[in-house]
Length: 246
Ligand code: NDP
Image (spheres, rainbow, N blue to C red):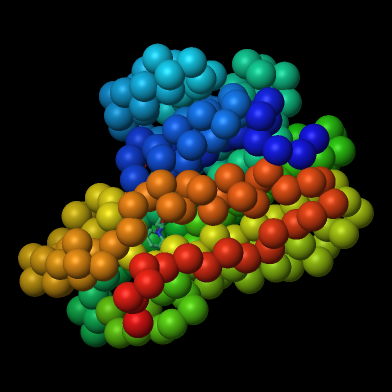
């Protein structure tokens, strides 16, 4: 099946930012979307918005650091809509600080959400994709992994680890069943940097995002572009950044 219309798409981290925009974009193009994250009230608001616009959307609470939550999310989508066409592994956290600050709890959080969470999603979706004979994994990585800069060591490391997993998985999956796509955004105006602990680091990062950031809908359109291709076309990598970003 090509196009977006009629596809069943699970999106993690759909309670805000890029995930919520992607859910709305894909539902607007006729996909049935299942939104996963921890903040259920935020998920519910987006589901309501999509339904009021005539779209099909469901929510399922998920903490991506728990493998069982990802399995339950995928099972819910299959039970509700009969199959799974795409898993968008989008949930992520960014804790920006120099390595020498030794914010080990933040390192663990980024590894758990950005890397382990994506792997758990792959582990949940792959058996379904193999059983159906089709499926598409989309992950949201970052330009942070492409241009290495100070203060983003562990964040970029988790994103590049995911990039590596996706490329190996692509090479292991040339039988036509699985498509893999890694999307690397630059600055996008979301809540991502609001959770940085250090006030100076936080305001510096927020200022850069406010000055440069593009809207999350731009990333949503890039994800839709990858999904809408015919089954024999795999969009492996997409990089999109603000035109003025260095
Ligand atoms: P947001 O902070 O708006 O969204 C992050 C999402 O991840 C939220 O929906 C949050 O939901 C979810 N999340 C965080 N931890 C967990 C968890 N343990 N389990 C389930 N969901 C979780 O930021 P963005 O939209 O910007 O981030 C989306 C992705 O885009 C991330 O992977 C980020 O790294 C990436 N990215 C963002 C860029 C930017 O400039 N904004 C640039 C490049 C990449 P909840 O808290 O409700 O669980």
